[in-house]
Length: 586
Figure 1 (spheres, rainbow, N blue to C red):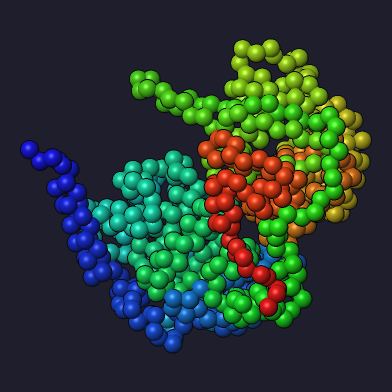
Figure 2 (cartoon, rainbow, N blue to C red; figure 1 turned 180 degrees about the horizontal axis):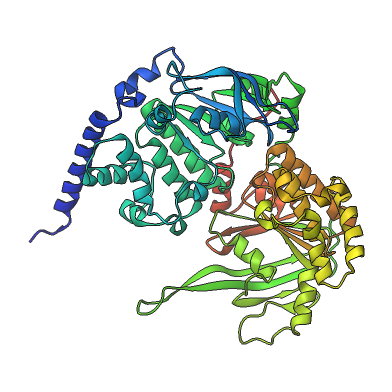
């Protein structure tokens, strides 16, 4: 009897993958640059992408004439060029223009975009479809919107092979399983059959990268692919992109606002402001000896991993006293066996007036679950939360004093979520969104509106913005509006759940300073949920590190971030992008 009954099947599967790989090389679209001579791209002096005097006009009535104005740069094989700048600087417009995916409202009014010497501007739609995937590909910021939610992940990669190769179904499947292995996805057959919502954020982003790289394009465009990922997942994605680049000699155009990422991966850097090229050059020249005040301003806004000096906190009666809370979910259903999933376990903290406590950890560590349990958005299954009254007891305990007590608690504890656009009703003016909470708590509408006008000035926006809709604001402005909405209820505790993770460094710095100013003015306590250790070091007095639902380390920011004791905390700090790079100190 064969002691390994699956060995012959595995060997057969491997052989099928090898044949599929060889056949793919012969059957790629004739327009695929990669299939022609992958090795040549690493030695040729001709740039893979050449952008010359690119100008993209904005519609009439916009805040400026051009989304991009006379931009020029080259991306060579095996090299990475980073486009950096604040939100609205035109970075994503450049990517959309190169891909031929520019919105109809924008028009190219000048310049040239050459891919291996072929002009892309004005190219027929059919030709662009031939080139996309085979010669140039793009990894988008949010994989959940880039993937089809009702289509299995393997079939979404299969679409690319169907369009550009003549492989049979079995050979395509083998090729997909191979690329899943190469992008380090666990259990490729299971991933192939999974829907996007069944995977983690990092796994979904690896699926998008697999789609982009399966035909080995000459040019890969990455538009903020790691913005919402925790530091270890981010490090894994960046390492994967570098690995695939080295294997295939791919040219990479990388769009980001994270200067730590720029320090880790860039060969050259192009800085944009309001569509205008401000500065460009080698990585060290731009990041260490910037020539322009704008670049120096961006670099000055990069938070340090060294904890900031913060005023001492008076240790009186805590605003929030959390005692050993936990949350357990039951998964599975009859007739299968149900199992328990402990999302959080035995988490305790005390938050005082004027204090900020940070909860950090990877995706799935349980930090957002803890925040939602504390805010009573979900029911904890164990432990207690004291905030002037007793709420959040587990089932079977003495219950809180009824609906009135819970209403008072929710007025006292307010939440600012990660995505301000999803937090605000797009059909309501921002003024209506801000006054809604106080009015529900019994405040007269006229008084609530006066308070809203005052709060808009607090968050450094004009009161007349109350009459506008969320779509009329930038991401940073929408987050300020969400902070104003939370403060309108006059809370004592503010829970910020990844409230600055999607913002560029300068806007992020402004929002953090705003929170610190409001905290000092109102003596509120802030529970700050983040995966960005640099941000935690600048705003937090205490830091709690979570892994797989459990607290592994807890203490002052100085103690946890400068002298971590637990191996997991040390790994998080080691994975932080730009570790050890000294910005602006050339």
